[in-house]
View (cartoon, rainbow, N blue to C red):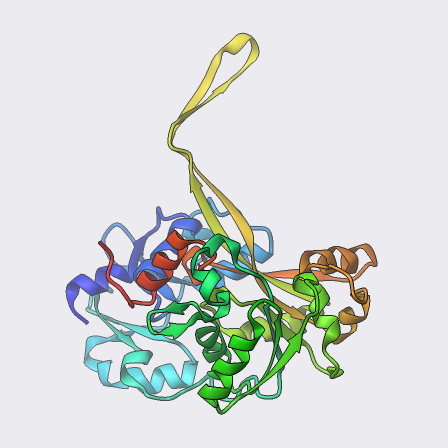
Length: 359
């Protein structure tokens, strides 16, 4: 790895958790981590997207420094043992190994992705069903959706819904249920012509039933937790880990949530009694977690959806909580949620997928 690229994978102790998330998103997605060095540039730790997720789930602050979250004894190799990197990564199930000189300074980083063609994801989720909610009109994307249903709007040369399905197919999933209404004939025709290796079963609404109501129309009875997802967003995450998290936590519903950072474009002032100025902060960033529209749900929750009624997934979440069920979250970073609900977001999605270059 060249020196400039190595810098993308290295952070300092002064980084906050939210800054580390952004760095992993922007530069180090191939490994899902960054290495932390001290003032002398010596390796002292590493922090992965999984470390950050666990920190958030136990209530840790996004403003905390990485020192509170990082693993302080990362796996590494001296330069003379660089040839052992691949076997070490396989043995320890890690994505990257830093190569160190005698002063523990990073002089190279070996990425598992770049030296192995092993497809680790294959068949991890075989047999898990996926429901894709594709019945809406996509009014925010008019006039495109006057001609095409939203799921068939292309991102590059591939419709968004096909890209979403491909993400699940990578894990061995072969069974998809697509709830449809608006321009449903075009969706049927597209997949008939595509003739994919997976199976798409169409579930037709006679009237709009919302993101949750249409699920009740599925005739099959599920005996395993299933994915439910919108048709207009790509989620870049480890789907097997999402599913495993749902099972291990004993959730009835797991909602995938993404970080959203909002920068106030002004200096913010805090005042006290009689308008006394207490402090000032220049263009602060506020961080929230937002619903991505991707869920894992237990089959029993479907029984809570009323028949033939407008009912959204958020209504189902509320109903499960009201009845004492357990609803959990699976946090992902801001750039792991690519939405195409509006034109500007479509451009961002294309840029992140390297379909078009940023200008």
